Image 1: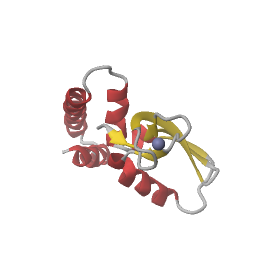
Image 2: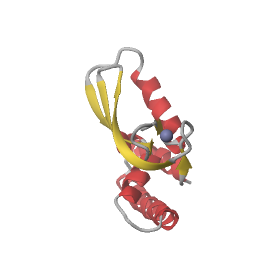
Image 3: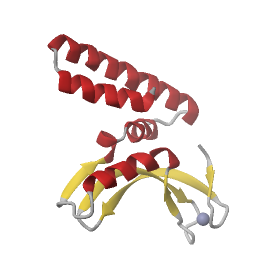
Image 4: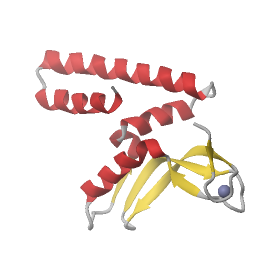
Amino acid sequence: MQKKCSRCGNEMSMMLRNVVYRNRVKIHNVPVHVCIDEHCAHCQVVDFVKDDLKNLMNDLGQNPSRQTIDFEQVSELSNLLVMVANQEEDEETSMREALQLRINELLDMFLLAQSLGDQNWMNELRQKLTQLI
Ligand SMILES: [Zn+2]
């Protein structure tokens, strides 16, 4: 997932940033690429999560109320990137492992939701799973 800066060509590193939307909504833990050159410091949202972020902003609309959102609660991909960011290993391996772990976790919860007959929860989990599989 190495990325080159589109402005100066230096490498970019991935980190989690807080993003403020329309001065009202604070979105925590949005994965961004930041240029390692401090003079450039170009910053852009990681491609993987752009759609999730766009959808979230659409849902919030033009006049959102003041609130704080944890992006990893909204975006399964962000959730994974947060997990990976907390590990030091080789990115590709840990991404795959994190993905597998998360899918297992969701499947476990799905079985639980199913055994409880909780339709809403099942739908919610199904939606999360389709983001990953
Ligand atoms: Zn740059």
